[in-house]
Image (cartoon, rainbow over all chains, first blue to last red; front, side):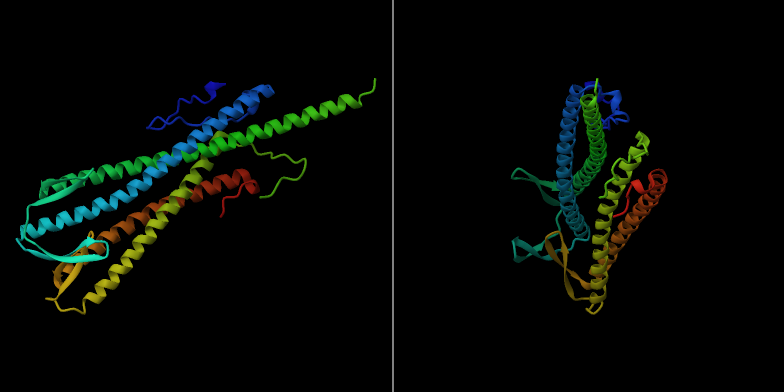
Length: 190
Length: 129
């Protein structure tokens, strides 16, 4: 019965596809079977749901990160242009939330990039641009992957829910038949 | 949700291929919702850009304008800001077109699936909101 869930079909990240139960009778013969299969299905459903949630969280993170990188990239490109034309720029920059102050930026060919973990590193402007472009495309690819995974999981959750419903209906039918048989036996007069 | 009348069985059997269609349908609906909300945001952005492009025409070419990049405002001549705004608008427009393309592809696939599923299941399935 376990092999029911060991599908050969997997998505590119190795998430196994849910089995589709067309006929419950092929897998379940007795009420012991029923309990076992039901439990397996529930477990798998939980796993899918858990994974889906983590993929959705990952998506949210990338959705936040991508605009940030894009903004940095805009600024880097702006500074690069101004360096090429050797113009200095007056700016109002954010010193703290709701607090802005004025500064003049001389033409520069170097920028500092915040790398995280309290580290800032100085880069030649071209290299900084390159690095940000690369980071941006990685983030976009990762976003696509997690979207794809979340969709795949969603599909499998639907399949598993249908399976569970089928299994449940099968059991209801079985109980009904049993009850009828019992009643039939009681009313039987010999 | 309506229940089937007592004693009546649902006669149409759901095959794996049907299940796949149902799954695809639900996946596409979700994708459509997501893209629609992004499209709304971009349309809003486009409106803002249009408004600001109109307003800025009222200023003198040599006047300095605070143009926002990331969290900082840089002081640029009106002329330059106009140029930058044009570029920004173009970018947003390209984005909007791409989104609309994607949405219409999804839309046509959805109606294909709808026809298939309704043909097979009739009143036993509800694909509307």
